Length: 265
Length: 256
Ligand SMILES: Nc1ncnc2c1ncn2[C@@H]1O[C@H](COP(=O)(O)OP(=O)(O)O)[C@@H](O)[C@H]1O
Ligand SMILES: [Mg+2]
Image (tube, rainbow over all chains, first blue to last red; front, side, top):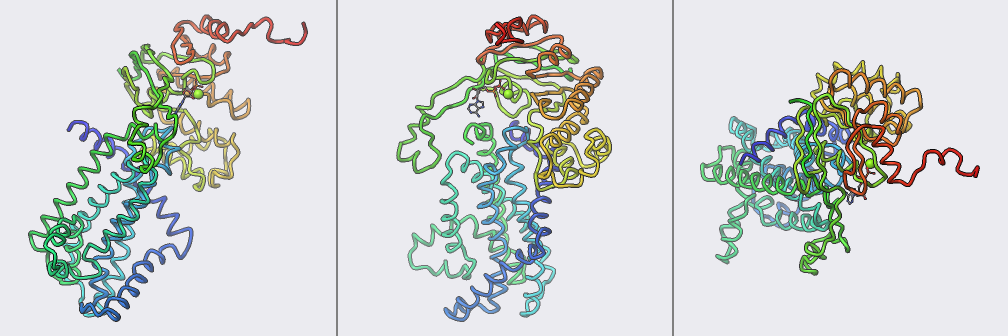
């Protein structure tokens, strides 16, 4: 417990470094190329077009204003999955610094989460525009996106800490992470409404999939953005617990293994 | 008290993996045997010494004798495998001066990045910036990406930053070898000033005259062991003995 408090205090002392690393990453991606910021916006929009074509037109999934529904889940999912997969390499990429300068190593994965968080904030703008254009204009419920983003960020941070540390010991973990997120994407209600999962025939499959820790977090975004209402208490509580538990687990594992990293580069 | 260093029976051990297992697949197939079979190598062991605030301590020894390893444990980069290291006060490690530089950023941006890596805020670094630029003598080059710097320019900027952060303990690990003679002399002057201000100095160099000039007390490392701890002259003699180095024969090895 005291170790955790010390770890958090050390991280807070280096918050300026974290901001600087986030700024550096954004500068490289946004400023160096004029298209940088555009790419950040374009990527979810292109995915939206393809998924809308496939699921709304070809497979006729029957969700009205499908693009709004899709983006509501896809944006937080992108924060979580892109943070975790890019963080997996963050310690290896910064090993030169880690070998020579004593800094809490968590700043490296966490600064990646920070820069993906900025991406999410930026892409909320086109989401609002599309939602308004399709007849679901943002209302006061959207204020509840603030805690939703906090919860999603904690979840992303926990996974990022966990995976960045594990990759140091086993380099092939990153391939497993890529596969994990591909599968995870399809079992999470992002491209289809979560009622589809409740209508599953197999009770076993249904109960396994109901344990998905990402579902309540994604649902929170969908309720606010797509359904235009605050999340129900159960969803909000489950999302908060899931994010807090993931963050605590990731931080605890990272702290235990941090001093060992330098022996495995 | 701020500036004190205490090493108690410190050992640092590296695991040398006979077959380097780096993937989960290999680990699973070998049933994690590598975790048991790793050979251990003690880069330093049984090292104990105390250092009071304001002392300036030198450390000499052959390449690979464990000097950098000990400095890195003092700087907190490495944790000792056994024993304990106590450091009191703010430490400024000059271990590898270019380590904290991002080649794509300008010298100016790197001053802030380096400061942040040492835990200083943007405002604190902004107030030091002019002095740092001045000392480094980089002039307009401060706004050029550091990937275009020569190794001497890297060293100048790195030294200027590390020397300007008002440390209570200054660690110097063979960083003065780069840079021209005049700049080296300037750096030595700066280190002397810092010492005069009461900062503890921990100085590693292969230039014996620098060590003798700066340090009242010198530690000699030999294959990971601390073999001598005492006055500079005696320490240098001991070091040369261990190297099989005879000073009277050295200057004209071919004349006989
Ligand atoms: N990360 C590492 N992994 C394995 N061995 C290392 C590592 N770092 C240093 N060593 C070994 O530890 C020994 C001491 O190195 P070092 O402290 O750098 O020596 P010095 O600075 O006195 O020249 C050397 O034999 C070196 O090979
Ligand atoms: Mg060395």
